[in-house]
Image (cartoon, rainbow, N blue to C red; front, side, top):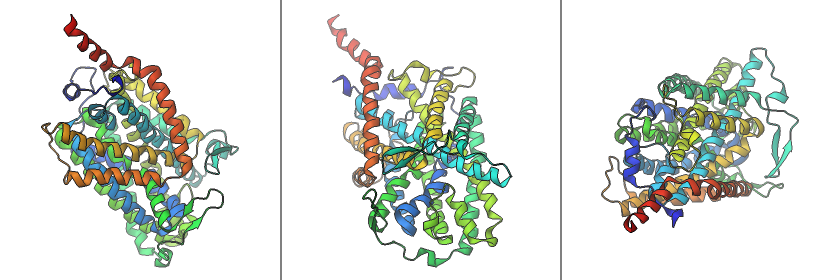
Length: 496
């Protein structure tokens, strides 16, 4: 039964009010939290995956995929908001699951969250590299292919094949730069993020506002292209299956709202401000995603959008009328994707911080710098691994894994809310999920359905990753858990 040891909620709450010099610094209010969420959400999803998913899966019906993914995400966000107001500490879904379903399930979800955050940072770094390389070309500087592309690509769904490149150096560089910003401090990181968010939201609004003036409605016909079967993989593309597959893939674009839930121990008045940050960030970004997907598929045929810079490609297709907007898009995406990397590294390092404090990871992940009050070593280690992935692998492979990991985490969160409503009905909840007995079950079912629509090769990669996680758990975490020891001592106390 050690596998299902639960972390007492009173212990979790006590950790949340720790104000010692080795605790995290509380420097975020509702605006900072919303900006953190928007900074994480608006990134590779809107600047990269939107066009690629339209080209390879849904066609102009990508807008329907975004609406579908947005609805599913809203169900999960409402459940997250309740848990965040009730358990306002670092760790996000890992901490919530530890309190509700026990340690082993919490470990599985934490290992799953590594896919969500760490692999997501790697994915966005690859998208950033594409825009940065394009920006340098516009300035007359050419970065060699061998140093700006992944050395591997994916063939026939699963097999890695060499591309001739050596390393995606820009992807590695941006991750390490953002890690240094995080190490500098939460206030400094929030200030940098706020400035970048203002820039990239401004660019998105410019593309939407001026892009609608040049939309060609013929590019939206047919809205749902006829279904075809890929002869190489047997996968169904376009038609209704394509809409659902695209919704599963682009779910990656929405995950940033959950980053807010990792900030519980660095938030002022978390019971009030965290639900505001989660729901406000998701609402703002859902509207922007839907409008952007309409614009880029209206500006250009969806078949030409399968590039590293689909928004740029859509604007470029219009010609001279929007030529002035091309460098704006490139600069906005280059700057904007950087803040997404920053917020994703932030979320992952805080989850590692929570796991380390529970004994499930080595103490170095919870080592806090006395002056900066940041988990500096854990942040740098997280960044190093993310940089390795971003430097070696293509965006498609990483993005599909992130979507699957996220959807599984969201399904468990929706189930955890139901469990706590039944088992702990008297716990203080400053925010309650409305229509809980409809919203939470629908959240579980819809997340699992989107998971089932993802390519089969992604399932194989997930099983391999989870198998590695089990080895790490039984090899280290199981034997170092703080709460196994606490339970053993409590059981021995009466005999003494």
